[in-house]
Length: 316
Image 1 (cartoon, rainbow, N blue to C red):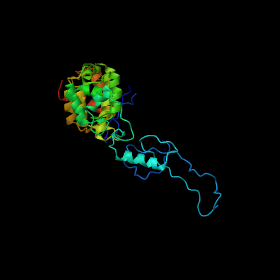
Image 2: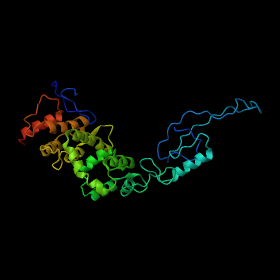
Image 3: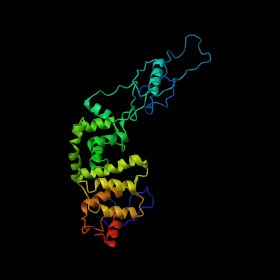
Image 4: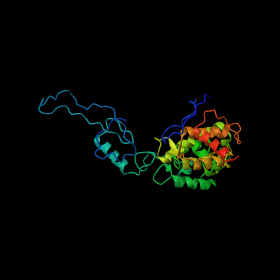
């Protein structure tokens, strides 16, 4: 790669500088109940024509009233209603949805939407889900870890979240659970516990480990609330690196203790996506004595500084 030194970015939002460039629903009648409590954002309705019968009334011809447009209304996310449904029916459906407990994934328990069938997988899910929702929250995830006899920071937990394609750390929706565990062929805690060794072993595959490492960055962003900045906090990065590259992981990096010490005393307060990805590549491709480190390669400045810090402090 063509050499070109870069300076450390001064704004957290900035991407790491490189030495070189790297490779409706159908419209319903107006509802009298407020829609603010609907379980999902109302979809934009299609434009509809008001039923007018004939262009002009045969009786009382033009006396004071023009054509009145029928206002479009967003349909509630409950059952579909045909275009011929009465206003009373639509209003009743909205009232039913508004008074039911709202599920975090947008489903409604107790009105309008049918609950998933009670299969062994669903029964397994119900053990951990938050009451009144279709989501397993942090407390449920912790209970699952207890039942699996593993610590929450076990790399198997991260791999499982990746296999389930969980969008938010500490949270598992029914759809994520159903799709992921069906793929793993697990519908009870005993079957899932038997998969833990294989889940950890996934980190021995460099390509799989790379994908999980990349997933972990987005996973952290999901709870930090700074997706727009595209950076994760330094402390969060340190904790996640201990899971992915720590001694308990098949992909352990011998220099992780030195890198952690360097990172915590550095001026870097956040880690951006490019830095995060490069840390994994550095750990995989550079020898532990740094003899294969190429200073002309396109590593982020953060890693160049790490090598210089190691040599200066004679950490090797």
